[in-house]
Image (cartoon, rainbow, N blue to C red):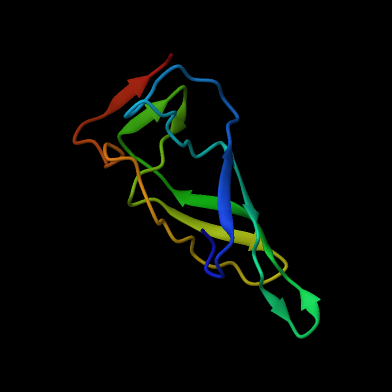
Length: 105
C-alpha cells in the first residue's frame, strides 16, 4: 500500500503459468495501480497513482522479468512526492532464492 493507505493492485503485463503457493508471482514489469490514496495539500488532491519498483529479485527471473520479493523496493508515482511503498503481506515463498533461477513458462 502507499504511505497514505492507498491500496496497490497489480495488472499483469506478461502471462505466466508459473505459480508460487498457487498464486501468480508479482513481476517488476507489471503495472501497479494505487487506489484510494487520500493524500492532499489544502483542498488539492494529490493522490498516489502508480508504483515504480526500483529493486526486485536478482535471482528469480520469470519470462525475462525479475520477480518482486519481500525485500523489493517500490516508490509511488503521483502529484505528490515519491514515497516508499509499504509491503503489508507477502506470499510465504516469495523470499529471495539462494541461487539464480530462470523460468520461461
